[in-house]
Image 1 (cartoon, helix red, strand yellow):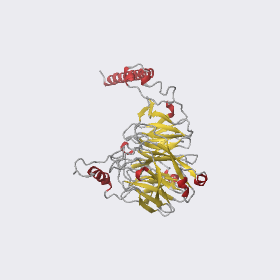
Image 2 (tube, one colour; image 1 turned 45 degrees about the horizontal axis):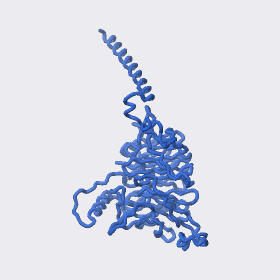
Image 3 (cartoon, rainbow, N blue to C red; image 1 turned 135 degrees about the horizontal axis):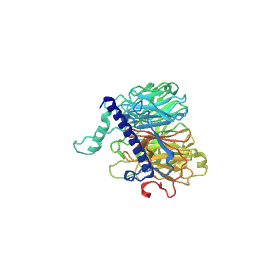
Image 4 (cartoon, one colour; image 1 turned 30 degrees about the vertical axis):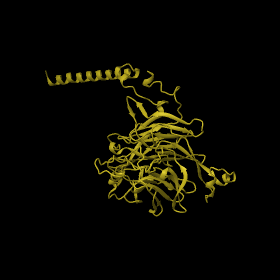
Length: 484
């Protein structure tokens, strides 16, 4: 047989095989759609308990082209900027990467890696000129190398745990602050390995990661908490220098649920009067008074599990703050509780002789948070990983412990609905893409009301939830396996 005939026969065979494969593929698609194959029955997908098209995700760039590497993709900071973009930062094995979500093109665009940082943890804010301030450091999600054998003794486990936690910071210069200008930085595309165009502002606290930040735009001061030493700092954004560096916590606690983390509050809130709120020793609400340049301890205690025992210290820490339209401030704790601090007109309260807040009337500024309401916890397990205010008068929360599947919950600010369980965060757009998400560490509300959630697992994606959905009758999705 001639070579040309052989080639012709092979071409016909290839075309026939191709036609056969396409036919089998189409048959498989029909079977999957109808759910009639044994494979389909064995691999049922759990969809959300609401209209599934309201939940989706985006890859962090074009796969195999400019997407952020899997090991450097866990998202640990998100911010909705005034220009409508959603900016995010990751924490990774070798580098922290910066990115944006552009609603005009419905895509995530990588903006390059942050030189000198492996992580950005809850440290992304916007200054009054439209530029962004980023707080870097080491990767908080990296596993801690724990010593297995060490001498016993009084508090030997706690002391060795501290040495293990502090070991990566031995000789570490410290997390740096950066300024990013969207006007110039958003232009153009960046490939893996390229650096993000940033202005290095300096190191606010030596030997520590920047753990959380908040900005007083009017005063041009950035406030922050560091890890692992739990320092509170104030940074002058006009002169780019540290103004205040004082201890926030004295005792070293490991109240969990992550036993390999020191218990340090993970959020700050700058109130209208300039005070900076967080939590402190014994779970007390504390604030930094910029007038006196000191931390003031209040009588208010955040809700959580408190175990009083001889020679034992343990208490929850603050996870997140969210200001409400009525002037109150919502907080979430590491034990998974939601609470509300109520803003009170102290002069009026004193006139009414309100016993609960009468003591606070001595406050020289005349206003403040003087009453705490424990709203309970939406989930049995601990931690509220982040929360944000939605466009439907609900606070949306990502709840779940470290290395546990997170779930989306909401709390209605009208006081009528209470908590609502929106279920697991799973997306099924098969045969194109599908993904089950487990861990999240950042959340923000877009300018159109979409809730953006940053997945913090390896090969992470940016999730999007569109509020306005109603649960299916009876609570569960009727197409999920339990109903078939």
